[in-house]
Image 1 (cartoon, rainbow, N blue to C red):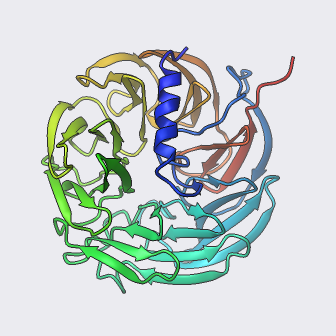
Image 2 (cartoon, rainbow, N blue to C red):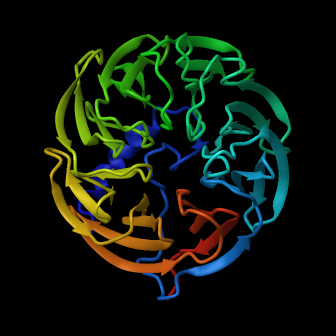
Image 3 (cartoon, one colour):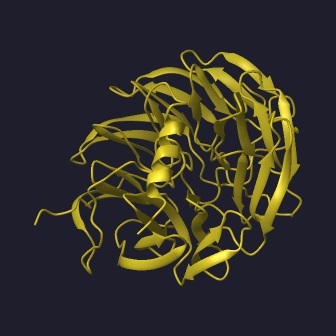
Length: 406
């Protein structure tokens, strides 16, 4: 089993204290891929866990489900129009509201996931519409547009950023030369600050905010740079050029104990940077060009990073001190999350795998195929109240993964 879990749990609790109220969002409450669930199955039947319900014909899209205490939210596209959905925990649609024209040029459908704070939901469409709606009704409270209002420039696969909330701010990346990254008031959408940053395009990355020696820093990847901004003012603190030619940087950076980890198969591999004490500069610690994936995320547990390797397709563990591979499994590249000492990998071939990590050692415990749905298996899964939610195109599935009583 994962021997460093008590330490990991303590550090996670420290991170939770940075936030004033619960947030439901892409890749879990703190966008780390970690879901604070317990009492889950340690293995699955050959056919997979019990399917509790399935919602069919919800439209195109790669938006991951976002789970709150009583609802599931996601976004879709139907006939070129985008929609936000709210489901109850039995799969019943509670409301559906239009978000305007949605991305259909390639890989049709929204990429971003909603962010829910209290009774408000925040969302960015593939076309750049930023919306705040009431979770109870879907009624819109305010909207801005990354291109029309904030002078951004959309990118070749459409905006894919899941909006970040911190206090009274909502952060987003229009990708304009003057409004590269902005902070909006989350209650009315007014501009708090704007940053030129490096002036280049957005790059499908959702930002993260963290505390470093008392300084709150916002970090994200743009098309050519990893950047760090002062989260209160928007001032550019540092930038790290992404020198390889790839322009797709999707994975959220991860901060821990003065270091920032990046997983970027857009040409740069897996990297570790060390921040200066004041947080105004970073230095590369190591780089593994062979590791990393495009959009599947990664998990840090103890002294190891866990996630997919793009080519050849593998699931790997890599050491945090030097980036070297500790162990690997032959498994389709896919998104990864973590709960109750187990890793859940949703392969792009439709295989859902349950993987046990043990100080870098990997064991594939169980797997089954996701057969319902349509198009690519790109959406990241989510877990809430002992239920595994998997979105595959036009279908949303809910699987019971609660440990059964003897």
